[in-house]
Figure 1 (cartoon, one colour):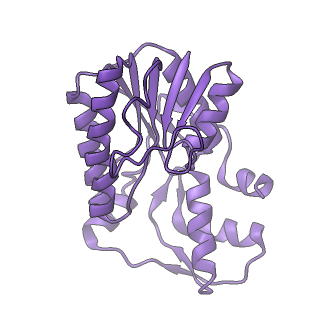
Figure 2 (cartoon, one colour):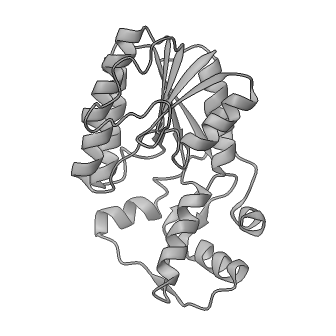
Length: 249
């Protein structure tokens, strides 16, 4: 199977590409930095003909976190991508999304909801894979915060998942028939942000206090209530937060 991946060099696009190649598929990497297929969804540059000869398309593109930047890639760029997919006769469009986006009042998440609706209305056969927060994303958050000698904590409930295991699910979904619906992937444990920060600090050997991160009331209630978690996901990762930190570089 020949599979195109939009955003193939990103945090989830790269492991998806690696997993599909391992499974014996041909992968066409579409990104601004691709040597063979440079594509810029914000402008449409390179998109014409980029999907010709491909059977399936994985949309791992990303923009933001500001709403305007996210819309430029995920909505305007996503529309261009879907039009190109229809023109190329793509048989399966796989959109990567996030658990809980309807319940969390963030501009970026509103854009992701709109992106999903656009995929559903496109007429291109599709599947949507939603995941909880990646270990790598949270590791990056704590690393960035530690430069200021403070780590964000609090009671926000997070269900971190290994992006490698998410990539395995996305690859399997891509190999299958379009579902016309959503599948979810979540980590093996639900932790409070403060717990995660303290584990990160101990394993990374960083000296920094954990402080409660101030959040707007609606956002705080949603996160404390577990809006970003899934008690019964379709697929559950097996690598917990501390275990991932111990083995991560």
